Length: 186
Image 1 (cartoon, rainbow, N blue to C red):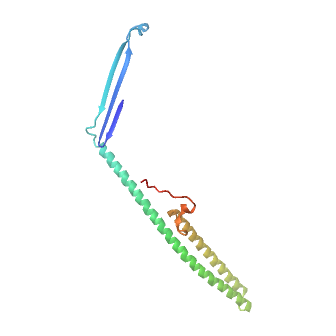
Image 2 (image 1 turned 180 degrees about the vertical axis):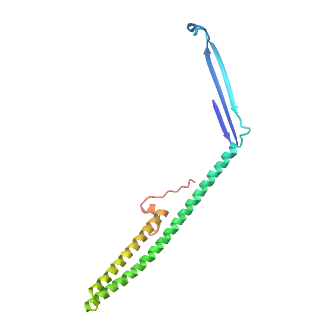
Image 3 (image 1 turned 90 degrees about the vertical axis):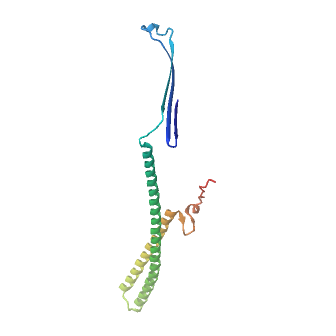
């Protein structure tokens, strides 16, 4: 039987043993089973800490340090999440501004291509001028596509970071039909 009780600052441990046996001592082995005697024994040992040499205070200090480290890791993770979201918001703004600018530039390049083609028809521009204006229009369209794709990727990254679809204005899980559950246990 072992009783171990830890309560607050005190730790109390008690071991209790009972034994029962039958024994016989005889110099000849054949007679060993004849008229044995019963033996009984009880052993009690107890541990009551009066002074632990600072072990408990060391364990408490160690636990506090681990708790502080955990709090710092949580704080660092929160700061990193906020920083990542802020960076993605800046990326979205930059790509959006770039895409809108490229859209205007594409319209200008398209107008320039139409003008170059009209000048070619009149004979005042060469075919090389027309091809160069079409090349600028294609390059501008590629830049617009790059800016738009960058904007879409930034939107996807912020959705992944926040689990919220800002285009539809609802949580990503709800968008796919997964209902959110509450962790409140009232």
